[in-house]
Image 1: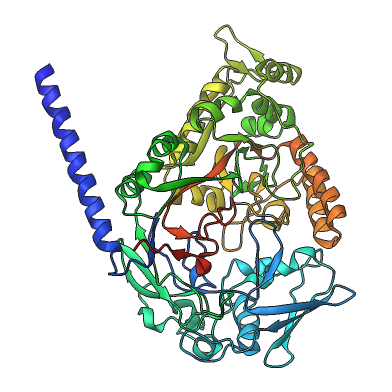
Image 2 (image 1 turned 180 degrees about the vertical axis):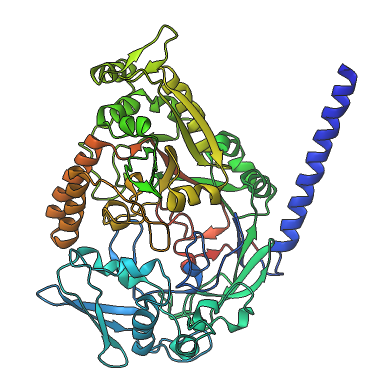
Length: 585
């Protein structure tokens, strides 16, 4: 039997080596464009659309193919010119006039003018018949009015808003699309009266039909294999010597659905960059010199990871969304605090993140200028957890199981997205940590689409571990407005889903919402910090989200590029148009 098992083990190892070798050969073949002046990266899945307005995914191609009026420096968070060379803000802060650069062109050589900007905003992003995630982001402040946008001349565009709104400049980073190509797709409709724009520029569109204004244009797309970009000959940006950018001729995305496979391909030399998972940091660190690459540490990554309980007390079709027994626990702030104190975050950092992370205490990214360092969060303190639970009438039976005041055993389901090794490991540890408090946690990673359906449509969930991406600007209406589509701990059903009755919005939720509205209206940065400091303290007090650990932003980059400036927000290739491949001849 031992001999047979040994044969099986050897066979499996040979099979793995064959498959790994095949995958590396495949990506080498796929990535090769016959041009060494290129960068080869990996993405986890095929693009879902080539239409920037309709896109709901990340990563997507549009960071390479389109630019907006302005952009944001990932180090300083300063707004910087892009298609617009300048902008003027009126004294009352209600009018912004953007001035486009001279001589802008689309990738087909046609002029890019104010008409394209007005078309992109008025006919696309603000069009009620076109579903775009960007539409709600254009709503302003308390009134939630949309801006009015008009052309002043071929280079100047006026944006008017109804009240001061600090995050408004962020909306000027939306991709500008070509009116001369797409206007007819908005005007023409299909048999159902929908603009044919909704079916325009899907992933089956020939690359030459996609007209762009960014540093790169699409050259080739092969499903499940690769996406290839080539430099846009009409890109506006030049270097200090007046040479047109970008310097790198091609960008290749190898489509690799497994982190393990991406690691193997990077180690083989097939990829120029890989995000460094804590699980294999030590392995790569030992290979830096031999592999001729550098691991960059951008500090704390933007974004948050958290555990949250479903506090929605509403009914759908006369049925409560959450078991009333469990709902009583989830809506008890001391129960949530007990859970927060009961999670061993230092162990998550040491065991799961291999020491490459730090506690996340608030809803704002650690690197953002609005992060409130005074919020201490919840250190691991199981005795404090038990004290809070006993204070709320919970008791323990002879087996050490936690019971509520009515004798019900505390048991709930915890879900996350399957395939994310970090979150799966965190879920397993949280199950163990809370088990020490007598709680029975049933942890189940789910397929991503199933998870999204539960959180967004059916609202059939009890507790979850997920994360939000982050940025420097703290304004987050989708999360903190009580009708926001990411206010998931007490979700209001979104349009098109079955309505619910009996939903209760607490006073502290309303207060957080009011603070976020006030923060958006305050233009003085120091005063904004005070407002968001109060909001962070309130979130920490009531714990709609129990924040866990913030990993470090780590990336390994081949030592063949000049100009790498690694940033936690923009990673290694945020300034790809300015990078160049070293001449090793």
